[in-house]
Length: 207
Ligand SMILES: C[S@@+](CC[C@H](N)C(=O)[O-])C[C@H]1O[C@@H](n2cnc3c(N)ncnc32)[C@H](O)[C@@H]1O
Image 1: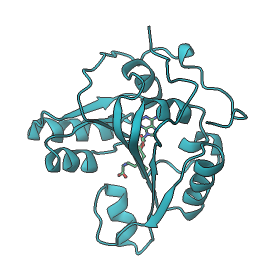
Image 2: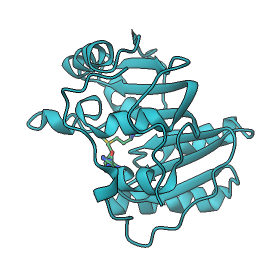
Image 3: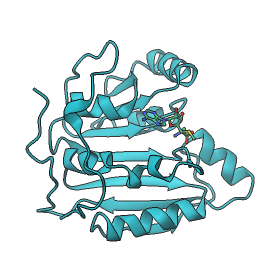
Image 4: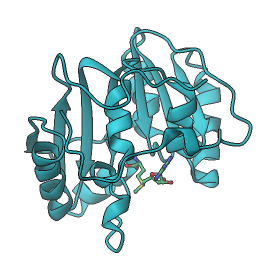
């Protein structure tokens, strides 16, 4: 289903993050990558007691803030993880284990297009970890980022993106609050993994 022109992701080359402990995967299991100080993760877990969220942040000081708040609320459906999400996902998740993925206001990587999520070979691996009909939500304040992501979703990943402006009253993350308060438009792209969608990692499981 995917275009094979992109460099292929090599999960077998990635070491587990330092101190990695394989998590118990719950059902339904959601994943947030780049959770920052955890505003969305904490709200999602509080508002959806029957859904389980793993929220990953790699910057130490942001993660510490998030982890402290998560501990205070002791939500048993939220796991805060301090790691680089790429090796973490490779070592922790089996194919078709995720009911949904959040990529909210990722770093725009203006000088490094290959580090934007839909441009990364890892994106195919991430798709392989999603269940059929699972939804991936990407949000950004940068119009060119969402336009590029929309094109890649269609042309590289053969998916049907739905793109729209985020409601002005939305307050899901610290970055979203900041951008909307400045009067900027924020954009969201929803991608649903179609039934029968195939990737080259559908049978790949970390030994
Ligand atoms: C612009 S901030 C947005 C944070 C939060 N989502 C928000 O909207 O307030 C992007 C975050 O993604 C994190 N990040 C980027 N790449 C990551 C990766 N591979 N694994 C985990 N976190 C990552 C960065 O450390 C940073 O905190």
